Image 1: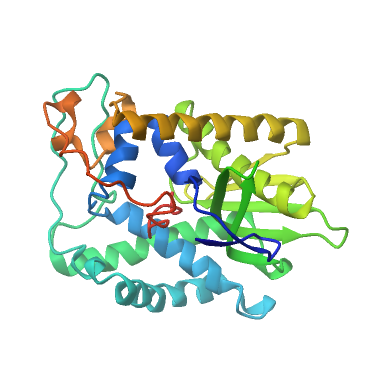
Image 2: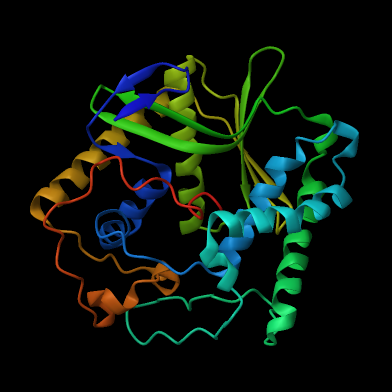
Length: 317
């Protein structure tokens, strides 16, 4: 495959690749990684996941407006047009609200949390679901305006794909929600989060994603980002983190080791379930041995390392 690094240099690479989402999948549960990356099993998106994608889309388009027009009202006016665009790109979303059922209680896998296929307060009548969905998205956008003033910002890049090769053996890549560059050349990576601010196990995953982006930017631009910023729109919280070069070097070695573990698992066709509190949110419980299920036969020929691309929901946490 041809790889264009964030510096604009095109290279050809056919080895293993990692994105933040797929790397986090393997760390969370190797079997989940297999289901998503090797078997490529379909997953039904939930309203909460799609709402995150919609809010990301609105915030991206908000910065197309002149600074003084970037108001809460303008953001709200973008919700329906962006929703129609998403439906046009992913027609399955048109049926998202046809039927929403309460989650089934989990009876296996220790400490599994209940799945959450419904938004809080989602009406049970079909006519009110989309309206409630739009209203909940508008509420999250209101949270954004509580933590930032977009009229004072001019992002250098939005929804930017960045990539680089690590030691000529591993392609790492991902989409950055927003990249700000100061007049002095300092970089700030901004990631929008539409769920609640993380606690304990979830916090590490969020920082892992940002360090991933910081490493790519450092290797391609020669500059360690000054700030990695998480904006939690639901809780109206800002979390800033400042990495250094030594830390990113260690993180780079971690990614290489993780990629090697994935390649060994492919060779051995051995991807084991890793039970955790995250099991309750998994779409593949019916195929998981921890829930009494059986995985499908391992594909005779695994997909190319670069596939599949990041899906619609992978960056809309």
